[in-house]
Length: 158
Image (cartoon, rainbow, N blue to C red; front, top):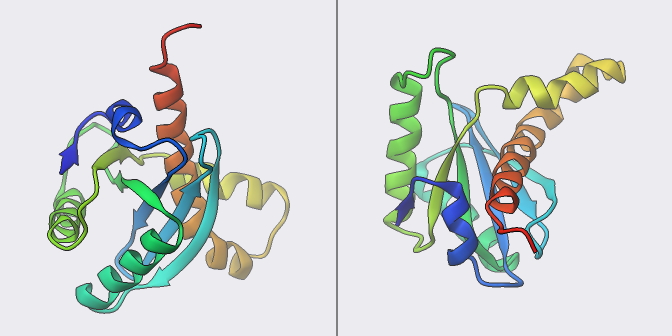
C-alpha cells in the first residue's frame, strides 16, 4: 500500500514497531531504522544491489528481524520539483517491493539527503573513501529523520 503523506504512517505503524528508510541508488541501497518511539533515525547498513529478488529477500529478512511496520523511500525529485527517470525507477522499485512485502510505504523528497549526510563527514575531515562507505546509510537516516520530524509535527499539541 503506497502512502503519499508520511504523516499518515503515524496511524499505520503499530506502537513499538520501527520504520525503515531506503535510499535507493543504482548500485546500493542505504538503510536506516527508527527507534520504537519514532523519534530518532539510525543508519543500519548498505546493501550492494544485485537482482531484485535477492535485494527484496534481504530487505524482507531485515524487516522481520527489526520488526518494521512501514517503509519510507527517498524520492530523488529534481531541484525544480519535477520527477525524472530516477524517480520513475524508484517508484517502480517500490511497486515491485509492494508486490512481495505487505507494508505501508511513503515516499520522502530526498533532494538534500546526500548533501546533508555528507556535510558533517567533510567537516570532520573524513577521508573520501570512508565517506563513500557510509554515505548511503547516512543518507537513509537523513531521509528517515525528515519523515520522523514530519510525523512528530503532525501530532496535536498536548
